[in-house]
Length: 313
Image 1 (cartoon, rainbow, N blue to C red):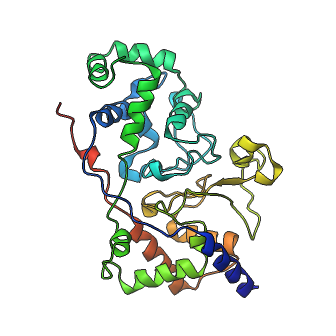
Image 2 (cartoon, one colour):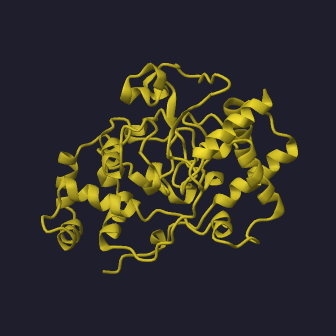
Image 3 (tube, rainbow, N blue to C red):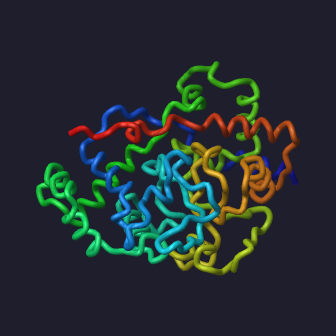
């Protein structure tokens, strides 16, 4: 059985994209700085209590360190907040793929009654009455403050939230001394166990949909047929898509605990054990587990430099 499973994943790897390093960004547009201001501003929520940053804290790996995030009026979400870092490389946004790109994604948290609970019709007057935004928008957009320009500015900022120059990226670029032997062994195990079948490409994931629980059925503590558990089915309404979701990126994975869409797994070690059990049907030896975790920690890159730069214009 073990040999059959390994063979299955080897076949899948033949069709998987290779892992490629994240390109390095050096210049940021003025629109990106405007988007940064909007991303950090609580005015984008109905009661001025939360911002995009509230659920996607850059210092916490672009996510939260809690099981679920909090929205307006202290409401609690039903999905673990995904990282915003490197989201420009996702083949779709949101777990169920309901947002095809970053522009579509901006609508979801802003209008969700549990998250920011507002609308562009409410947000636009707030920005127009602000002392800074009218001037900033006029400098970047001929038609000033409107829905399309708000979205565009936020997306321009989100495109800058990449984390290049991880140890593994340096290794991929030819620095064979970038990884220790333990980390290199972990990468080899990552391939041998078939993890690379789903976690590949520049984002080491986020380029296909997959079910949580291929080998062993995964039943969440919550209602298994609730909307937040159904995943891709919410979009396609195909029974075969139930519980499928966008494979998450492994970039900066050591920073984004807790894990899974429901935030039920607290540590990276537990996440590796869970995934090998439910997705591959194997239990790693203790020394193998340590090596795989060591490799995963080499995927932590440099935090986006735009966060440290004030727009001086």
